[in-house]
Figure (cartoon, rainbow, N blue to C red):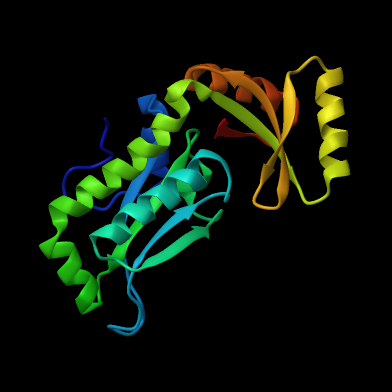
Length: 206
């Protein structure tokens, strides 16, 4: 495990992303407290992702579910492609907003259940990682389509290029996924290969 900082000093988001990429880590998890213009207006935990699919989306939902058990309202997953730490990190990344810092109820939950909150985040992450390490493996998603015929067109293109690809149902959409790698490292190599061919790629659990 590598921390981008261990003291209360300002650190530019681009520096966090750079440190994460240089660390060789498998996942990037950013910890934050939320805030609102007016105190005691909102309450709950929310986890941010670059794209609501693949490992990050699964990890975000698992973390939120565990933090809900600790006492936070579950505000769900929010897509934020504008955030540098989500956009510029090379590994699956999430940003956890552990309650609102200007909401009394969230501060009580945070202070009184801090150890349980830490354990909940760890369990949410472990539940996600365990899916990929249990023998099901990793793949690389290269497209997400509302219409099946569009997914089928992309699938046939990949098959003609010699790739092992499949179409998977995902929340009412059709995801085109390449490969079945037993390790995250293998999935990364495949992702880089597909990215060089011009595909938009995302590592996912199978």
